[in-house]
Structures are given as C-alpha cells and as structure tokens.
Length: 437
Image 1: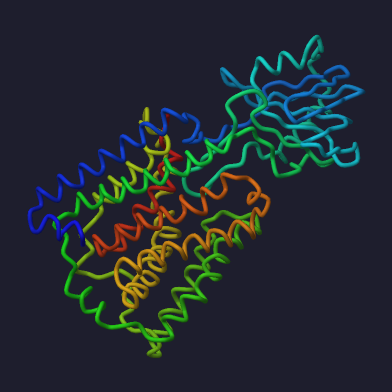
Image 2: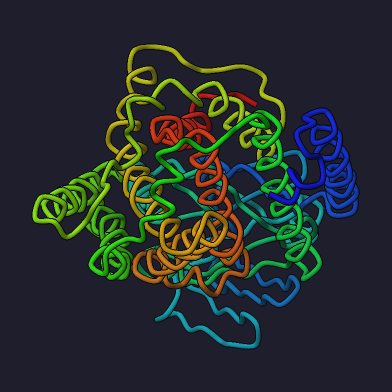
C-alpha cells in the first residue's frame, strides 16, 4: 500500500523502487554469504558403508571429546569427501563428551564427521584390518541402519544440514543398540547461526518482492473487497484455535506410526469435511476455500518462477534433472492432491481468509504466519524433541516454516487462486528430489 502511495499509478516508478530495494538486499546477501560461506547449510549426505575394518586398542582426544577403546573395535567409513570423513567406531569404550563421562553400559560406539588431517593425526600408527566374517558384517550393517547422520532441518521441504567446517565437525555417541544418544555435538559458532538466520530472511524478503514485481498491476477483486466488509462469525474465529492442534496432529500421526507424510491427507480431509459441515449448518459463511472459478486461471507461471527461485536460493544452479521413469512423474500430482492442495485450502483458503476478514490484509497475513510457526513448533516437540537442543532447529521454526507460509500467503493475496499456491507448495517438496547439482 505504501509503495502505491509513493508511486501513484506509475508502474515504472514502482518497478524502479522495488528493483532498488531488491538490489540492496541482494548485495547484503552476497556480503553475508561471502563472510560466512557455511551459513547456507548443505544438502544432507547420503550414508552408506564403504569399508568395515578392525582397529587396535585406541585412545584419542579431539576438541571436547575423549574416547578410549582398550580392546580395540570396528570402524565403518560411511561417507567421505575431499575434506571430511564420516566414520562409526564400535566397541567397548569409555567416552567423555563435554565433561560428562559415559560408561560401557551406556554406549557402544561413536559416530563422527572429522577432517582427514585431524583423523590421521588421532589415528597415529593404529592399524586397520578388513573384516571378512559375514555374520559380523551382517550385525554391523544392522547397527548402521539405526544411525541418523547429521540432523536435517526442514526435511519435509528442502532438506538442509549444518555442521562445522574444521576439525571434529560433528559427532554423537551410540547406545548399546546402535541408536544415537542425542543431541549431537557440533563446533558451529554463534556467528554462523546468526548469519544463517539473516541470509534466509533476506531470501524470503527477496522472493516476496519478486512476486510483487510480477503482480504490480494486481487489483483485488470485488469479491475480496466484499469479504473485507463482512467480518467472520464467532464460530469461525474460535475454529482457528482448534485448527492449530488438529493440523499439527495430522502431520504428527504418520511420523509416529512410521508412515509416509502423504498419510497426513487423512487429517486434512477430516478438517475440510468438518468445515463443509459447519458451513452447511450456518456456522461458517463464504467458505470457498480459495477455489473461485473466476480466479482459477491465474498464478501458475508465478508459482513456477517462485519455486525455482526458492530451490536455487537453497542449493544453487542445478546441473540437470533426474526425471527418469513413471514414478517421479507421478509423484508430483500425488503430492499436489494429497499434500499441497488440502493444506493450502485449509491454511490460505480458510485460515488466512478468516484472519483477513477479521483483521485486514497485512495483519491477517502476519497472524497466519505466526500460526504456521506455532504449528511447526508443536510438530517438532512431538516428533523430534531432541532437535530443540540443536541450535539450527530454530531456523526452521522462526524463519523457514513461517517464511514459506508468508510466501504462499502473499502469492494467494496476489493471485486469489489456491491452486497456484498448491502448485508452489508441491513443487517445493518435489523439486529437490529430481534436481541434480
């Protein structure tokens, strides 16, 4: 609104103002990423066993970790890059982590991501002997399946991982069953954490402004103005409070039952059915869920552009696509129908619409974003409470989840088409699985 007041009806002036603001934000982004190259995070590594060996009795210290294997043990190399090696050390040992001592009854080993130079230093003259016993190899492989690697942030959207850049970058102990004793330890600094928050916030602001540029000539429809003058019913207002735990529960149940996240569709469908029944009995009015015939042709190209910007912002320029076979092709419409569309109908088509009718466009968008952050926080508490001790988890709760909600909500305001929002939502889930970097 302020931009329109400054530029009047001159779209060229408005475009120049937006381009100037975006240029400043891009420069700030470039400076931040140059100073803190690790702040963007990494795509999570794929872990697989490349070698299994015995090692001799071994004692070493690295940063705040002290480990001792008086009888030797087994070492698995599960990932290796030009700088880092990720290994699992298994055997009876004594560990001191951050000043806390762990006994043999508490631990069975250690997973650590470590620089090659530091690994060679702490290894010393220890000899590694390949294992050929098939029964032992099977047992070790079974234990390996319980490991989880570096914590993934926002793993159901664009998976990101954060770990230190030098020395012993990341580690955690294993319990007697081979499962992680969490939280993990990492040597990330506070500057990297704050820099990451800033960088992703800038990405979100730039994305919203790009949407604004593509929709400079947007005018709200008469229907939207009509809704703005028709406050929602008291029932509709109170329903938003009930929807928060229901939406969180829809996402939580499949995870706790170890099922695909697509099974959350059952919860979304139940919520939509309840809303339709409430409208039938006169408790809710103007329940279009964003599916208005006169707006269904708008916004798809913008959704594709926005998804591309978000993916490139997270990963960089792609080298190609791995869309081979029918399964990857079918996964997009499945995600659209079972996740993207029902969630957008609830979040933008109902929740944002009710909040906008009650508080106005800007305040309604902001309150919807806050609700998204709260629901995400509830989800993490229920599914992975240990992640709340990992500092980058708050990037997901405070920036990534509400930031995506803000982008989707703003796209809905500019297109008034929930199908465009559902397409964007689906592409953000689908594209990382088929893009090659």
